[in-house]
Length: 242
Image (tube, rainbow, N blue to C red; front, side):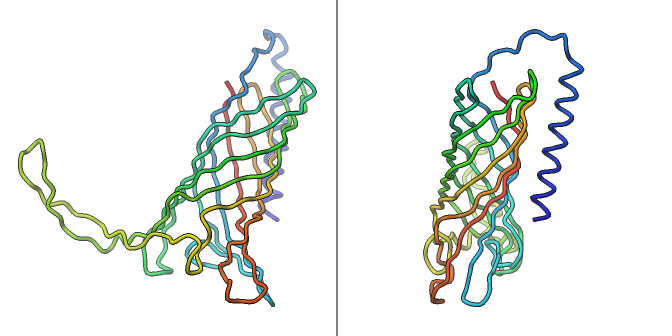
C-alpha cells in the first residue's frame, strides 16, 4: 500500500509540474500531430502470492518471503485514440529479470519473458500539451527462458580461436538448472492478469505506473487442498511518443 501511495504522489507531482510548465510556454506553435506509436522503457517487479488454508505467502523466485523479483521492460506501445479521448492500448514488450541470492544454493537467476497488454484507454487533456492517461484491461505474459546459475562453480574448456589459429583455454560457468515452468512447484510459463495503469503526458513524454493482479492459478502449492497462487506485477515506465 505504501508503494502505491508513493506512486500516486509522484504522478500527481508530475501533473502539477507539467501543467505549470505548459502555462509558462504560452507562445508556441500549434501542437504537432503525433503518431500512435511510443517507445517505452521501465522498471518492473513481480511476486507470487499464494493463498493457503490458514495463511498467505508472498515470495519471489528464490522462495524468499515478502520479497519481489526485479527487472526492466522495453518495447513499443500502440494507442489509437478517438477525438473524445477513448481508444485502445496495446503493444509488445520484452521483460528481463535478474536476481542474486544464495537461498537455493545458486548465485544468480535470470528470466526473459514477453508481455502484451490488451487495454481500453482514456485520455483527458488538461492543457494544450498536458494530458492525464488511464488504461486498463488484460495483460498476457509468456516466460520464454528462466534459469539458475552458480557463478562460484566453473570449469576450463578449450575453444578454437579462428584469428590466432589455435585453441585457447576459457573459463566457463556452470548452467545448473533451467526452470521447468508448470512442473515440480514452479510457476507456469503463461500468465494472464487484470491490469490498471495511470500516467501523465507532457508533449511527447509519457510517465506512468501500473499494477497487475494475476488471474492464472500457478499452483505452487497444489498438494495443499484449496490453495491457489497468482502472479502480481508492478510497473513504472517512461515512454516517448512519435
